[in-house]
Length: 178
Picture 1 (cartoon, rainbow, N blue to C red):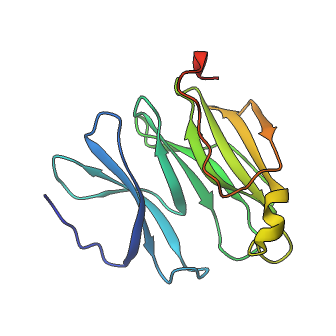
Picture 2 (cartoon, helix red, strand yellow):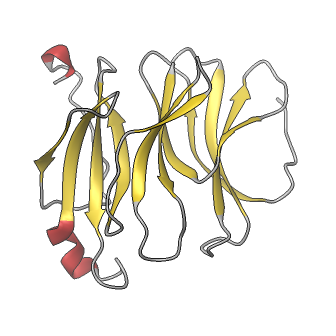
């Protein structure tokens, strides 16, 4: 077992093993938690050792594609409100980031799930209410569930209103991952 002391890490979350069990993706928070200077970073750690590799800044809510080529994540460029949070992919084969959604500043992605065939993603979107999403009585009236293709060209809402912070999921028994 290896351990690392990475300067500036405040907390770690959204840990997930790659489908082959050889790599661990995680999000580390640096800066002052909850402030505009907070940076959620996407890191990759190899099971066989070596130092962690920083893949992306302002990235959280990570989840692996079924084939292990991509890591889906959410990016919110600033924590000052209003600000959108969009869905992105990190392509491990090319080390590139791909932006899938471009929401206005009142919408942000809160949960992501891969289709069983790895060709689409389902994601929950919160529509911000005024200054804060802390009014949970009203939040359920302002959530949506969307589907997107991997290149982002096909995007459509499939449900709403819903509880925006509820995790989305696919039923694995469905044919074609639909």
